[in-house]
Image (cartoon, rainbow, N blue to C red):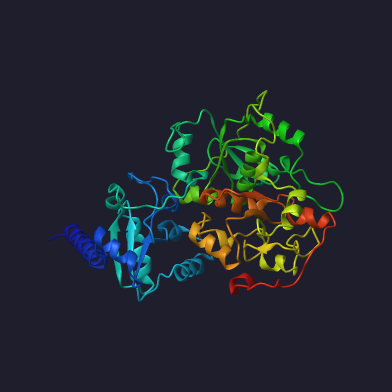
Length: 457
């Protein structure tokens, strides 16, 4: 045997050994009966390893029906691709939150034969041994088996669906869209982020156009007046019937612009779930070519066309007088809520609106949304969000008015609440900045409520 033959033989042997090893560690494939048993047993955890958007309800990977299996917890294989310093800790926190522990039997399911194996490999490396698999396609194909699909899951769009739209196709939920536009939102001039790379075909929106900076003191970032919003809509070519998908490097900017567009009167406004990070994790490229919108002579309806999206200062004050029907949900950090910090370098007033209920946001600062996001910046599952609200006594049957500093964080929260199917919701866009600058009463300190330990982070 010559040298080349020996090398080839060794390579073949190593490949065989790796295949044998992989097969030895591949979790057994179970059937639907096993899933039904697992649903009723405290010794099992069913884990959806697919893309978060599939869990929400999108029909991805060719499945016949969208949604997730009842009782399933989400732990997407995509989260394992995030290369950030905090990812390792976030993944372990997610496992604990979802009750995915080593002593339980873990049933992992996917629809592509890849995601479950990726999560199984990760769990195996963490010391998990009771791992099993299930093919979601078998469940979806049987119409008698229930699936949970969030009522308005279309409000946040998967990268693969947006890519299809950009390529000129009309995928699921876009079939009736007459005109589709993609915009990239961020604060400041295009050179700050847009010119460095954006979703192909998107044009840039500086958020100053919908909330012009105040002149002088005190600092204000309030929603623009009707005339300014009208000029903005016409300059961007927006009409009432336009379908818009808003993207951004930091998802907060996209959600803020999206909710303002809805308030203005646009009927179909969506956000790329997870922003630019999700786009890159899906394997798609950004572009640096600049795009400019074509103006339009008419918006096609009054502005604001959907005033119910925003609660005014007067409406909030009136609502606070009737706590049986109204809740002002404070989506800021715990330190902002109790008055330890204002949250902003340009706004010094600290405290909360009297009667506001803490509703979670982020742990670090006024620009974080840890409690509402997965490790890849996509939406956290609805069940866990609702559990956070329940821990604070927030009743979703009441009118929920979401507030933060001036409307960015609550734009994301409002969209998720709408996605879940909640009806009686709105944004108090003036937020803490508007309330405190108007000289209204404020409170500080720990409220007389049972405070969950995680709020102190």
